[in-house]
Picture 1 (cartoon, rainbow, N blue to C red):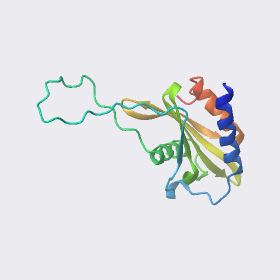
Picture 2 (spheres, rainbow, N blue to C red):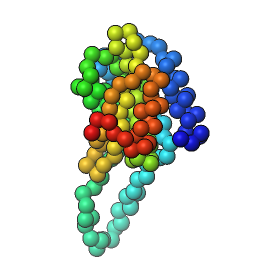
Picture 3 (cartoon, rainbow, N blue to C red):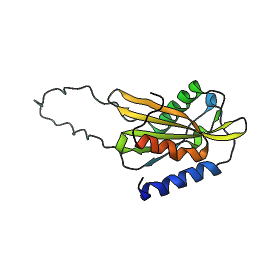
Picture 4 (cartoon, helix red, strand yellow):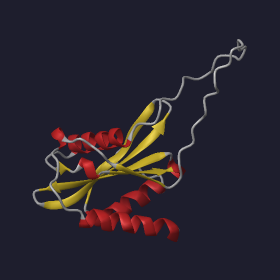
Length: 160
């Protein structure tokens, strides 16, 4: 892993490890997460409408849905992890989202509390033409977040 990617990741892990506050149960979460982008996703600009008729052919593929919001990505992650390993309390308002351009995947981390033990729900949500797809998910201790991110960057998906 390149050194430049390790420094922000260490900061993220340290931030998650030092987080305190009242966790929010998954059923009453109102996410207000933050987003970190390693490389911004590219988007296709829509041309401005003209007053003259266009003779351009119709697109050959269906339009791509717009990118989900950070809150939607955090909610998708919480729902997937909770269905897999319920019983935790999720701090959705402290969830983070990072765009991993190399894998066209959002890396989502949501702090958790399970019986007084701090942890993190982590998800890899791929950007597809049909919409976002949670391809990898699980829970880890705060110090394990970096390993989960590294697996995503290597293209490993443990819960496919």
